[in-house]
Image 1 (tube, rainbow, N blue to C red):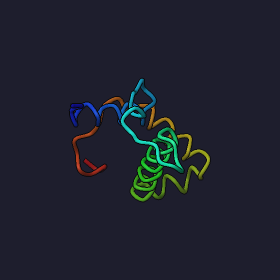
Image 2 (image 1 turned 180 degrees about the horizontal axis):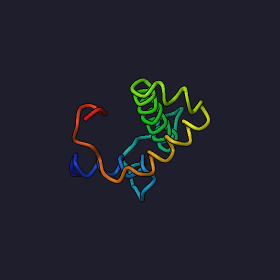
Image 3 (image 1 turned 120 degrees about the horizontal axis):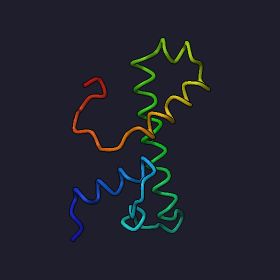
Image 4 (image 1 turned 90 degrees about the vertical axis):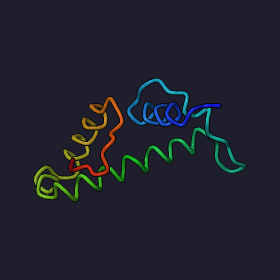
Length: 91
C-alpha cells in the first residue's frame, strides 16, 4: 500500500514542477481524465495560495499590479522545495 506521506510528497512534487507520479494515484472519471483532475487540483492550489498571499500583502499586489504580481507568484512557486508543516502562511 502506498503510504500517505509518499502520496503527499508526490502531489507536492507535482505542484512545484518536480518529477512526480501523482497522476498514477488519481482515477479518471467518465468525463475527466486523471491528468485533467490533477491539473484542476494543482491550479486550485496555486490560485488559493496566490489569493492568500495577495490578501496578506495587498499593498504590494496593488503596487506591482496583476501582471508583475503573477510573475512574483511564479517565482514563489518555483522556490518552494519542500512541503510546509505550518498551518498559516504567516508563520
